[in-house]
Image (tube, rainbow, N blue to C red; front, side, top):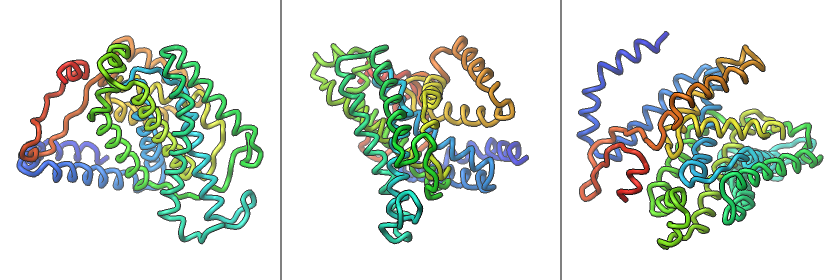
Length: 361
């Protein structure tokens, strides 16, 4: 009900706000954008029900999509087993918080005082889950030195099945039944914080010298190697960062549901991540964010259709791919009015395709 008045007010204030943002330092403009977004997210998700659920899933999907886009979109590899990294992060962080800070039947009495769990224990558990996922990412990074395309897709798919199979057969952590009793510590603030940090990390990486080398691998790996790009080192960096963020997303997912099950991290989950990447467009952080938001809302809106939603969603995606095969934002980014650049910094480059940007660089 408040959406239309809000849009009208925003349109009326668009020009004065744009002039104000152009008159302030760039760092202050960025801070105001983040603060405004945080306030909007908190107000819209304050119902504690379906809207909060959608926003939390949206944040987790954003982390999954941008991390996979680093490998598939910016580096040009074809990874299809991203849910495996998410599963590792979910289980490692859940086991750590249950073992260290809770009294329950699987792991016994808490090792540390429960009050140490939030926020420090939770943050460390999420980071530990991310690092464990990054170690599994090495299983994919090394084969990527000699394989590309379909062959690497098979390797990543195998890793996804291996991770799911190992968890299914580990009775100590619930096996196929899953793990109950994970502390309910994930909320909107944590999701906003980690999704924001993930976006900033991926943005800074792809804009750095390392990122330009990663893009060079996508354009032509042999030429990049001949030009002095250490392709093996960059592939390791890309896979480690990508799997780390997916692992942290898995930890947030586990601590929101208070339950993890290996069935949550199968090939369907990996396919969802792929859909978000290709829907938003390859090599575009903005596209991944928008696609994750659209996909999450679409899945929730079609929930009454039960199984039939998995017929409707692919049909919508097929239609989109027919009329816009490069995705919504293919190789493009949304520009924000962040205010004046600091003295001595480079001018703002206009929005253009990543291929042109790479050639210019």
